[in-house]
Image (cartoon, rainbow over all chains, first blue to last red; front, side, top):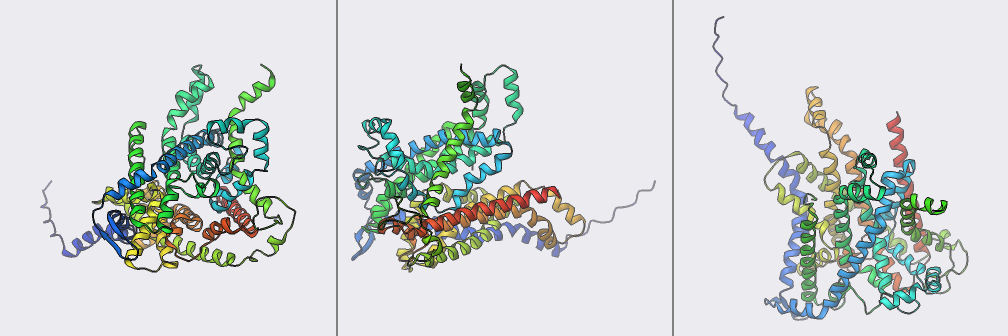
Length: 307
Length: 265
């Protein structure tokens, strides 16, 4: 066998290198328009608002950055009841969403059979109907002369809830109960969909295995199903809690005038009082509080691979 | 244990699930029923008597259909904008490794994790300070901004689960990059893109909070409904609500049917 000399390696042609760099730039070109949009209309406004929260002045004289940190302190001392109320309402609504949403997600994932698609449609369809119209419908459902109130009244449930301070007298509208009911309703699909997604991924054979090992249905749920659905629980609670805390529609339409949430305050400071620094400071406190709570929650629940 | 309690125990999950479903659907039923009401006075919150007036004259209220068509226009353009920009970002994130990938992912995630009122107020602050006139364009800009992330998430999920060998196979068969993209990549990504677009449309059409801050005196449909909650709600609002629900269910059903038909053939 005669060793043939390998031909010398061809010099890398210049034309070849150019497409390579161009190819390396492809992702950046793809990103450019969308990311610029987000930077200009999402990130920059947040920075701008940070500066607004440190301004003083009035609409007539104009606003100026004076590093007036006092606005934050004032906003907190004046509006801490609304902050606490928002967290309490949103927390209760989230807990109720989990309590109500879990059985439905479970039903769709494991027991619905050929009805699965129908049930899914019924969960998703409200997304496509105006939610303001549906929220207004709660005014009809919970109205003082309506069936719900009279049934609750005859069962003396309203006596108990008034004693607990979540309703007033013989009515439900314009009470915390109505607001929490509206919040729960509005954000329920955001809980059900992630729950369903994570439940659907669970291998049905695990249930059989647990049954074979003489686990009772409830034990199977507690030790197998629920832990495996944790990603859905975490995602669902976040998707419910975060928007619910900032919401002001339910408190406005279903609640009483003296029981506003922080969203209502921001809205009226910004759009009616035109006190932009206070509105900005309030939104920043809200954002910081939510970020802090979410971080702690994600650490605690141990599922950091959500994003 | 009696037979009834045993039955109840066995079907507890089903019953609880169906109860939740009833809770979810109840307002839609109320909206449907009250679209046939003839209210006494300005507010349509108590049942008076049956009438089909609102159905025969859905545009009978001043500004209602105008706001509806404005919302439709904004939703269409916001969907187009967010879908194009979002799909591009999704492809970049799913297909390429590059620097700043993590930062981009966070920037995409943040708008979804932020209370709407915070985004709404900060964007409005920017517009105010730049002296931009509020109206159609500010609403559209805001809607594209918050729909973008949802499109990216939907499309990215689809592209990530796609088998890269399909594209390699196309190239082995001498398809040009453009052909590969149009005949292989795009059709596979299409359901994700469609889901993202549908979600954007629904989000934009229904958005109230961000629109409320960035609309000025322009009135979209949700803002009309909001205003009517104070002024008095016309029955026509229930008609529109019912029609939207029916249309949504119809769209989903048609989609499902088309899906099963394709799977069978």
